[in-house]
Structure formats: C-alpha cells, structure tokens
Amino acid sequence: MRSAVVILAHGSRNEPSVRETLDRLVGRVKSLLIQEVEVGWAVLQFNRPDLGQAVEALVARGIERIVIVPYFLFRGRHITEDVPKLIEGMRKSHPEVEFLLADIVGLDEHMVDRVVKQIEKVAPDLLPKGPRFLVSPSDIERESLKIVEHLLLPLDCSEEEKVIVERIVHSAGDRHIASLVRFHPKAVPAGISAIRCGSPIFTDVKMVSVGINRNLAGNFGCPIRCALDEPEVAEKARENGITRCAAAFEVLGERLKGAVAVVGNSPTALLALLDLAQRGIKPALIVGMPVGFVQAEESKEDLMRQDVPYITIEGTRGGSAAAVATVNALLELAGR
Image (cartoon, rainbow, N blue to C red; front, side, top):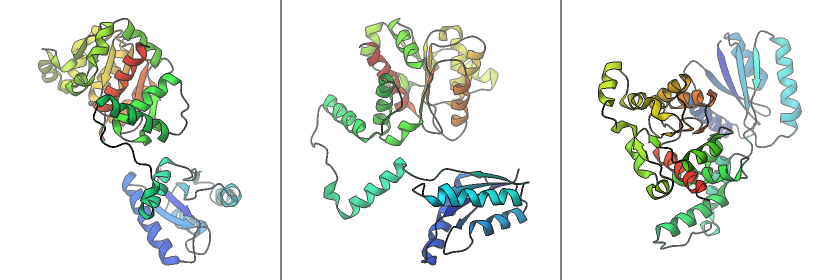
C-alpha cells in the first residue's frame, strides 16, 4: 500500500517562516520513516497548500493511505470540528483512499523540555540548582532519586512498579524513558518471589552481572551468573552459526526454569530466551532490555506477546544500566 504523511499546521501570514519551519520538520520526520513513505505539509489558513490541495496531489500520484498529523498544541475547534469535517469530505470524494488522523502534539514531555529550555536561555536563575559538593555515593543517589520523583509525571502503575521506573530513569538520566517501561501484570510479584526463593540470576553480558548488587543478592542466596561464562558457549555458537549471547542461553537450557533472566545488551539473547520459553523452559521473570536499532525493538515486541512475566522498555532504548537498575530495584523490594 502506497502511503503518505501530511503534517497539518495552522498557518501564518508570515509565509517564509511557515515554509522554512515546516520544510525542516518534514525533512526530519521523513528521515525517521521508511524510505517509501512520502511526507509533506499543509495548512488550515493563510498559506498554501491547504489540506485539500495536498490530498488531491497525493491521490493523483496513486497514494492509497494518507496519515494526517495535526501540528497543534490544543484540541480547539480546528481539531474537534474543522479537521474531522474536512477528512469526512475527502473520504466521500476518495473512498478508495484510507485516511488516518493522528493525535495532536499536545502536552508531551519533550515539549515541556523545550519550554524550560527557552526559559533557561533568557532567565537561567529561575531554574533550581541541586546541592553542590555531594561526595557520598548514597547521598548522590538519594538526591538523584528525589529529583527523578519530582520530574516525573504521575505514573499509572503500582508503587512497586514506580520504584523500578524511577530507578531506570535514574540510570538513564532521561525521564522520557519512564513512559516506555512495560510490565507484565505478574512481573514484579514473580521477580520478588524468585529472589526470595534464592533463584539464580542469569545475565547476557558481564556488564550486567557486575552491576547487580551482590550484597543484596547474597541476602537471599541468589547466585549471579553471566551466561557467556559457560564453557560450551563458543563451540555452540560456531556449530549453529549464532551469536555467543544467543548460544549462551541455549547452553543454560533447563537451568533457566524459575530463574531471573536478564538481557541488557543482546537482542539475539532475548530471542533465544523466547524460543526456550516457547519450548516450555520459562524463567520466573525476563528483564528484557536489549538496546539498538537491529532486532532490539522487534525482540521486545515479541517478548510482550509471550506468556511469561517480563519487564521491558518499548522501542530501541534499553541497555545494561537500565537492566541492572531493574534487578537492583527488585532486590531492594524483596528485602522490604
């Protein structure tokens, strides 16, 4: 299906500014979509093309699906009345074309950042300054978590899940990641129960294993093992033509049952875990947070479709620090 995106703005009598801004926006959006998608812009008032003209041009080029994205902050009459009427008319004129209306930009955390950044440029003294010269690691961590709690919007999750989200945000230094954390309904209870039973914690890479708090894990008798340390891993990877991280979990096999499996780096390790789970070898909890642009997002989408407790970060973000923060938060919760 040939698809196109139309970014719809209000328009302005300052036409050069409109064109420059929207041309740059279109270029950035297009760079983030698949190559085959056409991306353009239209306005409601003052300038050209208007939405009807933009749509007619796309239909004439054989476009079969048009996604309209309102570049608006508020759901005023343009969004609630004018745009839906325009789209309804287009659907009647072109029943062969699918029209999709996206939500407004609205109140997004990135928009909040931009507002604060603009304030900082003209009046930097209006931004709070954290305490200086903190030396103790515990003081630094405590102050950081206070800042994180202040920065986050209200979270639609349990108190225990909130603890984990805050730890992940703290580890990433990025509050926007909070909205991407996903929990299986049984994830936190399953993870805490496994820890209290002294279940092993298996990681995909050493960076994750060395970051997990061994003192806390030791309180429950939970051994921490990096799957790559298994002696048969290299040979298994060569024989099967797979990555060492994927081979490592294959080698662990039945030992993963009831364990906490942690992936902070390798998408192929997570895919191997999911394959084992489908064969009946299910960990008590999978912390699946591979990072990157090749298979990371897809592996996490697969994880969220499986019948196994998980904690993950939607999209391409993740990494060892986030995975470690998740496990350490679970260890702290288990000790409460």
